[in-house]
Amino acid sequence: MKRLLSFVCALALVTGAAAALPAGADPIGAFTAAGAQASDYTYELTEDGTARVIGYSGKAAELVIPAKLDGHAVTEIGVEAFMDNADITRAVIPAGVKKIGRAAFRNCSKLTSVTLGEGVAEIDEFAFESCAELVGVKLPSSLKQIGGAAFRYCEKLPRIDIPEGVVSIDLLAFAGCEALAEVSAGESLEHIGQNAFWGTAWQDTMLKEEGMAVINGILLAHRLQKNVVIPDGIRKIAECAFRQDNFIESVVIPGSVKIIEEMAFSQCRFLTSVDIRDGVEYIDDWAFYYCEVLSSLRIPGSVRRIGNNAFDSCPALTSVEIPEGVESIGSEAFKWAQELSAVKLPRSLTDIGYRAFGYIYSEAAVFSNFTVRREKFTVLSYSGTQAESYAKENGFTFIDLDTLTKGDVNFDSLVNMKDYSALQQYLSGWGNLIADTAAD
Image (tube, rainbow, N blue to C red; front, side):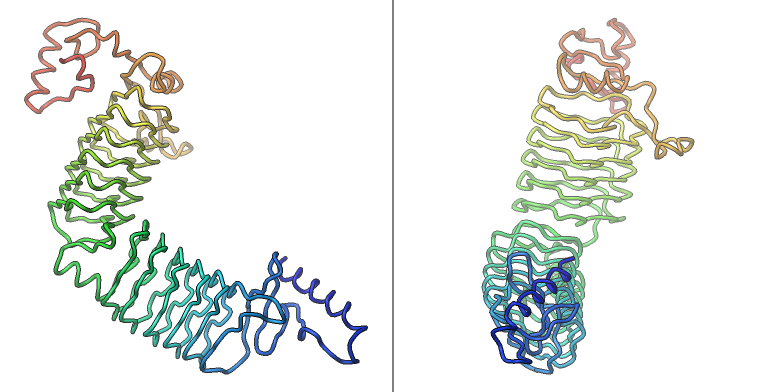
């Protein structure tokens, strides 16, 4: 649609100017269905009247893209605009360009140097992928985001300086850059995607010498080991940092970590112990998905949000402590916890997602994603809370902790030898008490 509008607008300009020009004159270049032609460049007009370069027919080795085409400021390099070019050795992007589009310079086989002018805020996915001769990249301070696989397989790139201002580096951004040995980044960097530096000399050296690859306090990769103690000072565990690690059995996460990102520990099949220290604030979606032997969990009071499916498919989980301070638990956060029969929830909870607790796996439930409501599930909390509403909406037993009898460990309104036996088993490490209030 944008290309069609570009063509119509350009045609109107040509028609309107024709009467004032000599016969045969073309004031702004030849137009095709693909856009306007200015010298060797094909472009289209964006909604704000600026130019987006969408093609190039020239043979220049040193490409200096003009700041204007037919009087229109160039603000974007479009999708695949220079892809597969076999002539360009050096590219200079002018100040004023805001975005380098998807695969814009992908597989430019002779490209060795790229200079991005001030103004570029986004480098889209695959933008410079497989530029195998690229050895120099100058990134501007205006840059905010580097897209997925943007520089993947730039095998000769030796160094990258991520300027202050960049917030996000997406998955596989520099993966397969074998010669990349030096990486620096500003303090603004908040997100590093999965395997962003996989297969680089920098990451390989970090893992060998330090055991972990860390940029700006973000832990993005680690050396395989059974018992992991994340050092104090790490502020974020990046998405998929430990995903599918079949060596790890225990992990200690210090209070300096504020966020455990998506899928950080998902599918760690032998992870039995997770020690999350006070200070962690956010456990993101799918963070501990399918940790199949994880049996107990204590969430510290500093946590404010537990994401969607955060502990989904942890079938061995028998006890979960959710303390005061937690405000939100996402949808299906503890789905398929087959052994979890009760949960104690705090007053601070204001949002409990769809099927967050009390829903288990059933092979027969083909038409409900193999998920059924557990027949006997108990929610312990306080009258008038979101927890009470959740229990009633899902048909679960609700026990008001304000009315719970001291010593009534099994919640049968009696205090007798059954409670004593349950308490003894708990203290011996054989049992599980959800309502520790009753045991005080």
